[in-house]
Structures are given as C-alpha cells and as structure tokens.
Amino acid sequence: MAMRELPAAKAAYLSRVADNLSRDTSLDDRSHLLYPVLAAAAPGIEPVLEPAECAGLVTAFLKGHADGIAHTLYSPAYLHVGVKAMKPWAARLLADISVAIMDQLALGRLTLDEPKVWRFGSHASEHTSFPYGDEDPEP
Image (cartoon, rainbow, N blue to C red; front, top):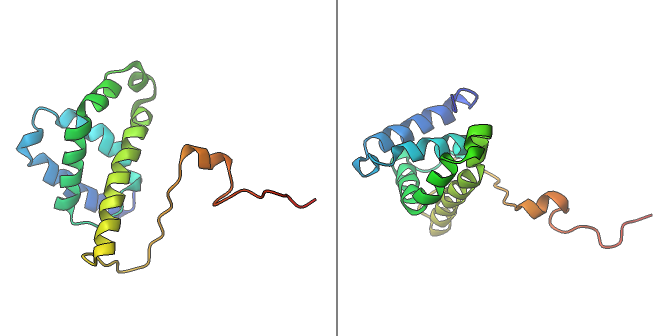
C-alpha cells in the first residue's frame, strides 16, 4: 500500500530494497519493526544507491533504533494515526540515506544521471523564510 501512489520507477526500486531486506537473516526477529518505518519513508527515498546498499543502511538504522521504533509501534499514537506516528523515524532514516548519498557524491563514487536538488530543513524552518527572514520588511 505504501508504494501504490509512488512513480513506477521508485516503487520498483523500493521493491528491490524490500527484497534485499527480506533475505537478511539478521532481521528475522525485528522485521516487524522495519516495514512501518520503511512505509513512512518510502515517498522520500530517492532511487540513487544500489538497492542492496540502501537495504544495508535501512538494516543499520533499524539495529540502532529498534527500541525507539518498537516504542512508537506499540504506542497509542500508532493506533490512532498509524504510519504518521512513524514520520519522525522516517525522517531520521531519510537523513541517513541522504548523508550516504552526499558522502558518495563528494568522494566521486557516485554520479547522477540528471541534476537533483535536495532541500533540508527543520521544524523551525516552517515558520521562517529560507535562508533568512527579512530583518527590515519594506512598507
């Protein structure tokens, strides 16, 4: 369901990532924690890294944050708002994937076929102009 509204290329990429994850035996006892986060992150995951590499980042993320993800998954918030409760975890996962992409670009290990623009922000940026608000607004 998480992929049905995604462009076909992105959905196919995420299917390959999920296939890699399903074969990872180190996740057998925690895979139930993985997919709600992956579903919440799906729209923001760019198909830039190899699917196996992206799956490796997802696995490392889960291993580092399993307790917090479990707390969210088994909280009343998940019952009330579902995938939206996983948005903070999805944002962290997306940040990890983005850092890996940018590191590889900086090292010259990765090239993009077409120019991409990524924007990073924070909750505070919703209330201020980017990059800075006008100090002296014109009358």
